[in-house]
Amino acid sequence: MLTAVLLFACCLSAPADVTIDSESIVLGSLISFPPSDARANVSLGYAPNPGLARRIPKYEILSKVSSANFSVDDLQLPDSILVHRRAVGLDRNQVTRAILDAFVRQFSGANVEITSVDVPVVAIGRGAVEISASLPQRFDPATPIFVRIDVRGNSFARTAFARTTVKIEAQQPVLRNKIAAHTEIQPSDVEWKLAPVRAGAADQVNGMLAKRDLEPGQVVTNDVLYMPLYVHKGDPVTVKATSGAVTIAATMRAKAAGKLGDTISVEHLTGEGSTMARITGPRTLEALLVTK
Image 1 (tube, one colour):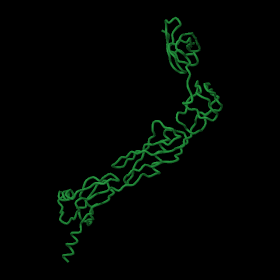
Image 2: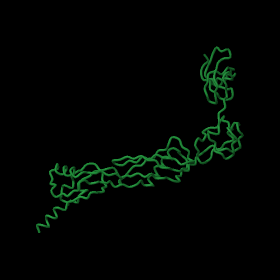
Image 3: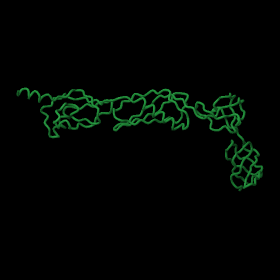
Image 4: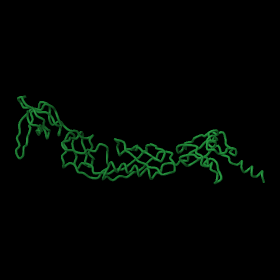
């Protein structure tokens, strides 16, 4: 009977390799103690990050148990114990929702459909995590986009990139008519309608000319337009000034070149006074300051 008791007392051993699922390591996660044995609560410090491992030497374990005023005589330990932290991968649905939220924030009012997501391989703990996504500053929705994914848990943070393809439809400027190269696009040539979003879609076409021949149904983008110079340096220009219901006009000289909407300096033909004026049309400006 005494022999059986001694054998039982010597059975508190630990394996050389252990997997845990907690943010800290206690001795009870390495050794199966009886429920009444307080040594199970002895702390062995931090747990490794999910998917990683920490090796704890035998002498460190015995030192911590002894420092807590507990006996170590019945503990059978290997020279070291490799402690792994259990990990899982990212939840595809959670990642997809975060990416969709990022696109909806940037394209408010548009129809957004995530067509594919390559979920990155990231080892995380099995507890609750927060996932947020952010889009690159510049991208073309017609091509795959690498969306940044930020993952945060109670004791860790990870960053990865998810290759994403998306379909975005929003109100876009679409040509009604064929436009010849170097021809000014008129408001009647354009209608705003739902169409796939493309990089560099034009937000305004007033006063713009086509760089090349454009076809009906084409989404108007900045790369097919250019703004002509409405005023050249030295040009005689008409400058208008309005006060209430009264408008006066004078012929002046442009001191700089400019496009529609630019503000330039103009001077009297005698060169004795100048003012700032905004270009409103070909060789036509609106005075902004009182003539000096």
